[in-house]
Image 1 (cartoon, rainbow, N blue to C red):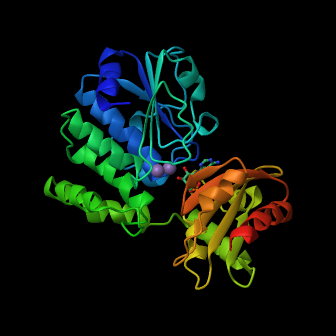
Image 2 (cartoon, rainbow, N blue to C red; image 1 turned 180 degrees about the vertical axis):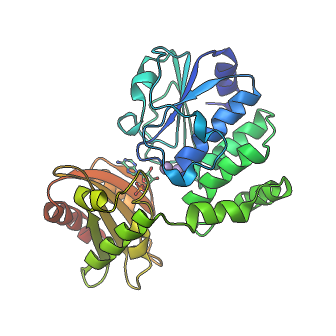
Length: 317
Ligand code: AMP
Ligand code: MN
Ligand code: MN
């Protein structure tokens, strides 16, 4: 699958729709908005479908253009970004009906569900793949597109601190600085600022955090009731799982969040100094992600989900 083939499809399409995974993070939002802005530069007007837009990213250019649904049933082209599989894709109804589909992603567990699939699992962020792609397409990455791309890079690398970061990541960031992108401002907005609700959820999750298996596993959770009580909005659960991974001796940090009754969204992170592959663990439950950051959806009560997960975690720690 080559970039030229992707370019041909974009050039031929009139009605284009852009989408990403559910509960979108900074990389999902940054990827969609930078793609939207890049297509605009190519003379294409695209729809961006987002059902839950985290307010942290409302400052990004193009954020006010997103839609929760569309009247167009059959698009010429649908582009999925930062998403492993069809079941996690928001707006999959448009994707499934589109004449042509393209998948661009950086998850090794991507199921290659598009007509064209451009997946680079060593890229630290989907946004970094897009940066290379836009350069190849000869689209100038201006400060607006750059801000969106940098948002994805900063959030998916934990602020340039994960081992996924490459020299290219820094070279690209340096280039954006030269172009006038306010790296410090974006960093503070997307990583260093908590909503009050996010802080309240973190407080509850921290109080409940258990250290299991001789301190090798950190486990905590939040329920729908917690989210209601603190007036949580989309994205307000982000970052909670990171808390557990920094505790000395923790090999796996687990955070579960009630999605529906008896159904939990699992977030797993590898502890600092450990090399456990949490994507492999989540894969057992039909999920996936990256070696050091992965997720899945598991049924049961908090206790039941905890036991199911621990059973698999114990095999590898
Ligand atoms: P999260 O814990 O939701 O922040 O997700 C960590 C990483 O795993 C992200 O790259 C997600 O895109 C990915 N991920 C989360 N949940 C799933 C899932 N159910 N299936 C596949 N990948 C997932
Ligand atoms: Mn993502
Ligand atoms: Mn990503």
